[in-house]
Length: 154
Length: 154
Image 1: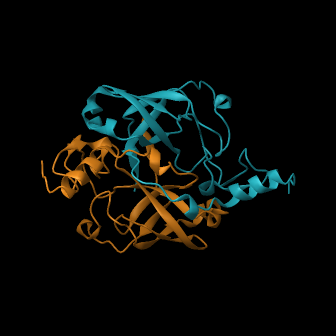
Image 2 (image 1 turned 180 degrees about the vertical axis):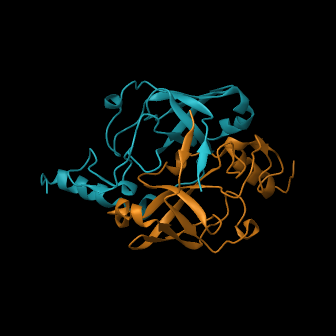
Image 3 (image 1 turned 90 degrees about the vertical axis):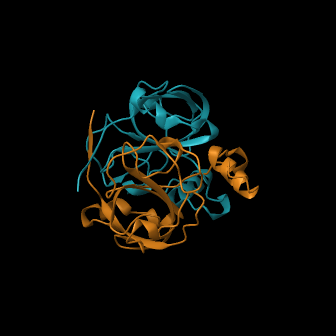
């Protein structure tokens, strides 16, 4: 089974180069950007302005190849790619939760972008519910935080 | 730009047919299932067992075509496809948050599946943080809930 996808639009962000994007899964992403949806899909945005947050599913279009293990910027140890947000994934799909600030026709102004300018958008979905913070465990991320806080590198 | 993807595995669920899946975005999804990752990607699961919740990105492989407007099971009014979780989307990508219960090698037992048995998995990512419930607005969903609670259909 092979799935062939075509973008429904592009994201406009302040980031022309990867090094400009705040690093690591804990980085604050307050940057504003615009989801520019192609004219033929504008009708699909009907009523989206009622939602405060959206999932944006997008393509790492400037990445080639993947690594099953990699060392994230927030740790000094390698982890499996599916336990990280590494761009070098078997299927180069990105997922970002953004806050919807404003809609003007097919332009959605959002906060929280972490993709490169011009990134192709594959899908947008409403963010409907959250996992309760007391039920959330964050594996190696919490362990790496604890090691850094204690000044112990390994 | 065209993106061609191949599954990294399949989801095993109790649902052989669409009508068995609890309907609507508010439906409780407590069903357990298994993410069966292909052997060549097992190394990519390293350290995933530390996370309590995962994003599963998957393909609606038994859907053809899309509608820009559709009436969800939870409402009597049409909404734009990007404001719903309709399977009939321009890019047939599904997104589900599951709770990770257990890992045995390349088999992840999870709670919260809402896909058909045999659904192709495209990617898995750790669920790292939630939107605070007091900041979350759910647009037409909340309005439809309010109309139902008030016994007013339109």
